[in-house]
Image (cartoon, rainbow over all chains, first blue to last red; front, side):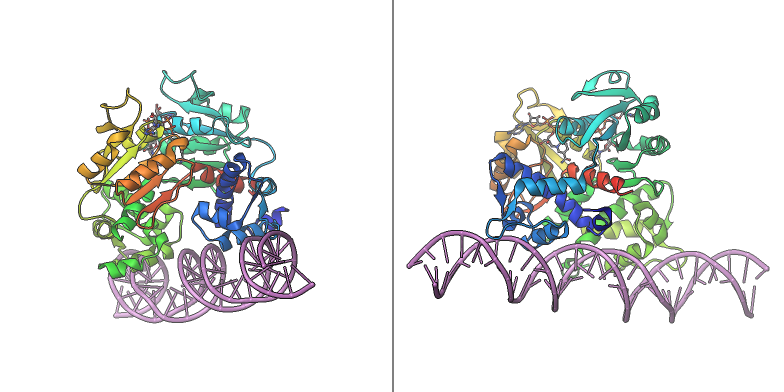
Amino acid sequence: MDKRKMRHIPHKTIERLSQYRRALLICQATGKTHIFSHEIAKIQHITAVQVRRDIMLIGYTGTLRKGYNITELVNLIGIILDTDEVLNIAVIGIGNLGRAITKYFSGKRTKLKISASFDTNPDKIGKKYAGVDCFHINQLEKIIKEKNISIGIITVPSSETIEIKNKLVNSGIKGILNYTPKPVDVPDNVYLEEYDMTTSLEKVAFFVKMH
Amino acid sequence: MDKRKMRHIPHKTIERLSQYRRALLICQATGKTHIFSHEIAKIQHITAVQVRRDIMLIGYTGTLRKGYNITELVNLIGIILDTDEVLNIAVIGIGNLGRAITKYFSGKRTKLKISASFDTNPDKIGKKYAGVDCFHINQLEKIIKEKNISIGIITVPSSETIEIKNKLVNSGIKGILNYTPKPVDVPDNVYLEEYDMTTSLEKVAFFVKMH
DNA sequence: ATAACATTGTGAATTTTTTAACAAAATGCT
DNA sequence: AGCATTTTGTTAAAAAATTCACAATGTTAT
Ligand SMILES: NC(=O)c1ccc[n+]([C@@H]2O[C@H](COP(=O)([O-])OP(=O)(O)OC[C@H]3O[C@@H](n4cnc5c(N)ncnc54)[C@H](O)[C@@H]3O)[C@@H](O)[C@H]2O)c1
Ligand SMILES: NC(=O)c1ccc[n+]([C@@H]2O[C@H](COP(=O)([O-])OP(=O)(O)OC[C@H]3O[C@@H](n4cnc5c(N)ncnc54)[C@H](O)[C@@H]3O)[C@@H](O)[C@H]2O)c1
């Protein structure tokens, strides 16, 4: 699967591939070797056609009446989503959310590794959280370069968001995942993703209200 | 804006309205009274047409060359998204993530209120987190009914997810926001939203890899 | 007063995403 | 072997979401 072809995979498919892989790994752990499109669909609350279409788009082919080989499919998704080398990640702000994230990723996916965390609180600096060292924020640029960190996750109080974003951008970060409720702007060469659970919750509230 | 009309608002617009409101409230706090579509667009990293289209869909009209009245627009979004009464929410599992969420919502939006939290750890039960009482999980059904809770946020270890989901459904919950990496199934009358940051992070990683 | 400009609102066009429909082929049943 | 069933892969159709294009019209500058 070359880069030209990968460029044509829709954004939505990329998201679903990540979700499929998680579901597949869970199934794999139960000893299953093959899975049908409708089984994946059930887990993800989507249609079987959608699953088959996504799998078709990445050029994988299942076996008729047997379904998809889980190991092969997982590997192929890995070829598309994962980098060749481990991708190093930093968490900025090791409060409740930062710790939840760090713990969640520790010793998990091989290709995504939280390699450092940063804070300003002297009680936290020098400690390890889920095995990850916590450094003072003014070491950010140095450590990012040293450890070849390419993604930063922002979990500081929102008053600090802009400053942290600037520090990350100045350190040459490639991608930012911003979990604070303060939207940021980044240069074109930095990929930005923002998430605020207020939106998820308000969406649930809206559809609850609408029955 | 009656319910019939609201049903025709696309899902994506609902999400963006929530985001617009957050951005508008921030702008409002700085003393601004009006805002242009391209200003909202800039904050949200989308196009101005998209903003105008969304605003058109909810039936609001700006002033030519002056933009949208922030207060009026915020109020109208409130009419669409918010329930009339306060909507009570429970957080199940008051670990790192549960506490981050509880803190984030405490004393924030008037219409969404975290009214109770639940855990099994005896050290946590009876305590308050960001002003919210923590109860033992076997009080779930009782408290949900007593406090008229309609949405549950699941933040327990993923091994417990299914059990908690079942307890919530049996207690008559209307909506579930599942933050554990274990996908769940719910009956048709319960609205479900799931979020796993692995997907966000893998998406960032993918686009970083693609330049 | 006039020209130049900025901004909204929206019909039409385009693009993206999802769904429907069904042929092809493997499996199992009788 | 023949038939019914299941499941994939894909083409075509439909639906949803986004963007284009521009008329309408208020504002500012001269
Ligand atoms: N996106 C979401 O859904 C969501 C949910 C909950 C919370 N949040 C947000 O996440 C952020 C963190 O929430 P939390 O509950 O973990 O808060 P917290 O107060 O527990 O943690 C913030 C941490 O950042 C550190 N910090 C402060 N200034 C810093 C700086 N300049 N550089 C480095 N570190 C700094 C603090 O010492 C603290 O450890 C907040 O902005 C909150 O609003 C987002
Ligand atoms: N969606 C995401 O992006 C994301 C990010 C980080 C963590 N997570 C997930 O969120 C969950 C919580 O993470 P965390 O770091 O807060 O974990 P944690 O261990 O700090 O918290 C879990 C809490 O649940 C409680 N608990 C255990 N069993 C329970 C039960 N049966 N009923 C009620 N409470 C129970 C524990 O006592 C603990 O307080 C995990 O499943 C984790 O994988 C999701």
